Length: 217
Image (cartoon, rainbow, N blue to C red; front, side, top):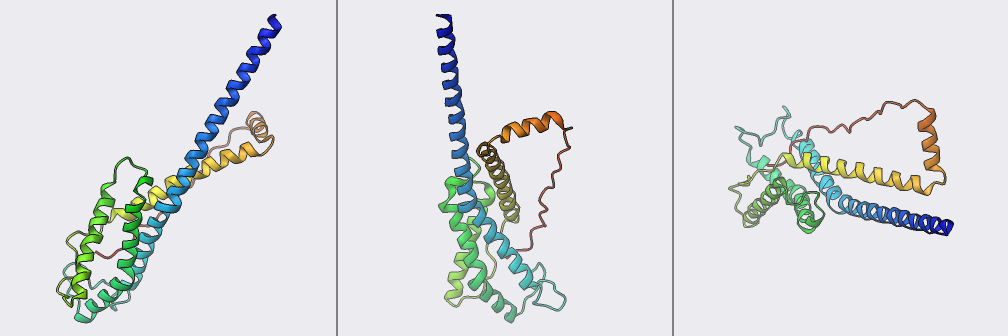
């Protein structure tokens, strides 16, 4: 009788352990699936659009004058030709890109890391809307204004890079966990190394993020 009770208890413990393991694995898979969507549908495109636009503008702007200083900075008076060149690049390259980034933020807001829309994204969407009004005036032949009432938020590039990096690190960690589960004996070999080897100091090299290049205001 006692042996039967022990067998039943061990079976129950085994079932409970399997259930908990499968439940944890299911939650990890769900988390991994969401992170993958966040990277591919929101933060990846947002980073690509903002960084490419900033670097393109920075490279283009430096070619306009021999001193490589922006004609569009504070206390500068761009010529009519420079303003016409600005409108051409804005209409052909820069504004289409920021519109795409704005649309990604609006359409994929359910994938945000935060529980609320970050202020930097609200400011960015308002900035694009302000430029939409200027573009409408350009189309009507009114070139009296080239600068939106709401400036481009300089923190946007940093936010996009930081969010992408955070999610990527979590994705790599979850994929590494799954790989260890799929390789027979991986957990045993890892445990054996921990017992027989001195712990090595962790060497982590943070991603080096360059300062965000200038972007159109």
